Length: 460
Ligand code: URP
Ligand code: ZN
Ligand code: ZN
Image (spheres, rainbow, N blue to C red):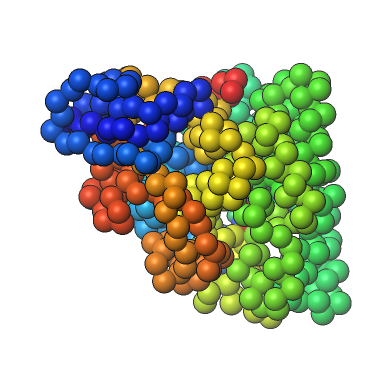
């Protein structure tokens, strides 16, 4: 099968021109102006942008968490991703404390394999680092293609590891050529504040926010960077929200370290005033919580300075019934919010259209940098002859309104209900096949392929 995408504005992290893209089978075979090619299928992309498929390296699908499961499974979540221009997701396998990494991987493969629409891969969350787990790291990297290892400095008793384990893991992951990623917040300080607020009868979603002040994230980010400095490991801090944490990444860069940072779309666009809406605030209960306007400004600046390299989602949806588990106690509200479908369009509308970031920066932070950092580049993350034909055709002028009535995520509210967005992902192509076109789905469940990744942490 061949496909010619004609007359689009082709944009990668390094190129920007109006031209054509030829796809044969799963790969791009030519890219240029006025390509002289006969193709079975011709797509006119006039007045549209032709971009690398989005990569969301932070999603939680069908994940057991806080007594329930995130409400998008691999089928609904990866299809919603494609509707929104994301062609590859990286999800998290969570080790059960006391059990092996392989045991967890088997469970996650059982839920995901054969069920994905988009391409997918896994980070391995090491929640119990010991001699057995240590022995599994090299196998994960070399046999399973899992080159990134997630750690939690919070959620004590379920996911958190202590600093001694962190240092041991960093040494081993470095030896094996991988990257250590982290949920960097001070678990003990947060647990103390949660207990204090509960004891005082302060039980609304606002107290979720007040239990995780900026210092809890800044301190842990600095501590993580120090441990990475001591061990020489490459580190990656997920879902960064605030100025204090960004400053620790800057300090690490001054020491010539490789501590990379990701933020998520919600931290750029939403702020903590949403927690003042009584229980409705539960829609935005996530960890870390939304922050202040000054933090949003700091994040946009950090993106433009190359300090924050990736904009992900931390997509972890829960239906309203599930959120209501915490109706009487904020600490029982399942943490997370739905965004997998919205990231590309929201960042385009709020970032590019409003002149906060350039189009090439947009491509970098939605696709190219994640591909490089997590060992998928150049197959993913760019458009060039020889790479996977993962392409988004985005109509930059088309306006639409986000709503739970029209989205494809398996969740009965939208955290962005009524938002007016400029720019619509018209067609999403995954490995040479039109996956979604003007809202209609053209591929079947199971088309999405598991991606083994190579050694992670390439310079971006
Ligand atoms: O609130 C969040 N972020 N839920 C998902 C788990 C995590 O910490 O990333
Ligand atoms: Zn987290
Ligand atoms: Zn997460």
